Each structure stands twice: as C-alpha cells, then as structure tokens.
Amino acid sequence: MNSLAPRTQASQALPRLSRADDVYAQLKQDIANFRLVPGDRFTENEICERLTVSRTPVRQALFKLQQEGYVEVLFRSGWRVLPFDFDQFEQLYDLRMVLETTAVQRLCSSESAVSKTMLAELAAIWLVPAEARSTDTVQVAQWDEAFHCALVQAAGNLEMARVHREVTDRIRIIRRLDFTQQARITATYDEHSKILKAIRAARTDSACLLLRTHIQASQAEVRKITLHQVHMARQGGAR
Image (cartoon, rainbow, N blue to C red):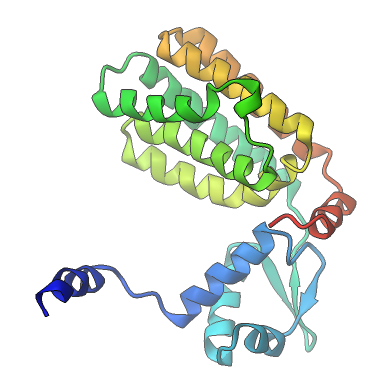
C-alpha cells in the first residue's frame, strides 16, 4: 500500500493529456517523420480508424494544426498537409540566429555551474573521436536539436528558451531533411565541436561567428529542398 503512494502522488501532480492532445501530438509527429508530407490528403474518418479514437478529438487536433499552419481543410474532401512556407522558414531561421548568438555571448562570459555542467554534457556527445560518432540519421538529428536548445537554456533566460523551443518546433521537419545526407552529419559534428571549444575557451567573437556560419549553412540547405526530397525521405524510412 505504502509503496504505491509516491507513484500515486506523482501521477496526480502531472497534467493529464486529453485525447485531442494525444491525436495532435501523433499527427504532428507523423508530419515531422514524413509519414504525412506536403500535399497528402486524408479524411477525419481515416485518422479515427488509424488511431482508434472518436471524431471529436480528431477534429479538435486538426483545427489546432490548422491554426499553426500545418494543414488546411478542403471543402467536402477532407484535409491536406500544407506545402512548406519557405518565406516563413527564412524568418524563423533569422530569429533562431538572434536567439542563439545572444545565448552564446552570455555563455562565453558565464561562470555558472549549471552552464558548465550542460556544456560538459554536450562535449560528451560532440567532442568524440571520428570512429565514435553516430551514423544514425534520426539520432543525430535529435542530438542536433538538443544541442542548440541546450545552448539557449544554459544562458539562463527562460523567455528566450521558451521562444527558441517554439522556433525549433516549427523548423523540425526541415532540419530532419537536412540529416538525410551523411555529409551533413559529418559537418554537424565538426561544426558543433568547434563551437563548443570556442565557448569553453570564452572566445566570444569566434564562437558567435562559428555559430552563425553553422546556422547559415543549414539555412542554405533549406532553400534547396524539393518535394522530391521529402518523398524520398518518406520512402527511405526516416523513423
């Protein structure tokens, strides 16, 4: 009886997700993982059957995704995943660069134990010999996202971190496409290691320049993305 008490208290402390939240999260993951790609059409009934849920939470989830610019409703013919908005991606990358370079500037002058611990954790992933590097494209994509989020979090400004997470969420599918190429994985390891070394050595100007160059390289790859690449990523089994 007593052994169950902590678990019960913990479960009560956590917010309970609704069925609509579950459907929303699943559909968003489907888009990020290329199970649903721009131009795909589907009906509410198809989603209900696949996720074994009623129509109400599916409709609520779809309306939320519509508000966020992921899907659109088609008159009498279901829903469609919207094409990429490259102008919006450009703006989001610009905002990302402002947030991350500001964070790096703060990190270079920070004596915080939290900052140093987080940098050490990042170094354990990125400052490794070439033979120890991961070749798993999905894993490296997740680590890349975590790397940039960690830099902003370590800077200690909660509002900056919140906005940065929102930007990261919006560009996730584009960044996943970037990691379907082995050359980009190698470049990411090389560039992240240089950024980390510069931050740990408190070389502010160098760290900011390296970070800007790194983000600009990713931004340039975004401009090259075609619908063919998206479908190839789906066929290639991006998990």
